[in-house]
Image (cartoon, rainbow, N blue to C red):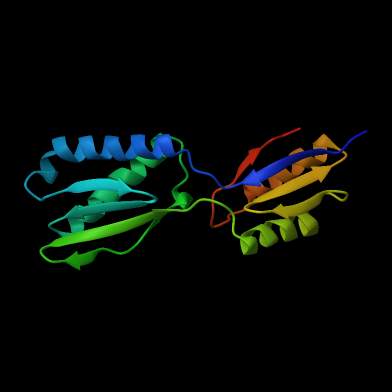
Amino acid sequence: MADSSFDIVSKVEWQEVDNAINQTSREIATRFDFKNVGAEIKRSGEKIEMKANGEERVRAILDVLQTKFVKRGLSLKALDAAEPQLSGKEYKIFADIKEGITTEDAKKVAKIIRDEGPKGVKAQVQGDELRVSSKSRDDLQAVQNLLKGKDLDFALQFVNYR
């Protein structure tokens, strides 16, 4: 019998990110507490820029964005927001969207699988993803449950289950 396998990836659905940003933009345009504070949010590439004329207002924009991320099923671990910076007369927050598993993170996950996972499960790094294989599908599901229970500092998705 051939080995069963799945891939562990850390990807972001960019359409959902755009939807979250657009919803945040519409909400700050209509909310009373954002009137006349120059509140704005936009995305350029993999960066999101939020700006307003007060530090607490720009933090409130970030809070609204995080709420929209959660509602759209996006992990907050993929959103890496910096501290507010004063730029002229307005405050700005730049947030990066983290995608892909770094080699160090992949090695950490592989070590967790080796140390705490079922015997006979193999994990190998393939670029920015991790392939997990085993003869038993039950062992693979046990690995998925193990990793879901861990508090890692990056988002994980399980794809290509075969």
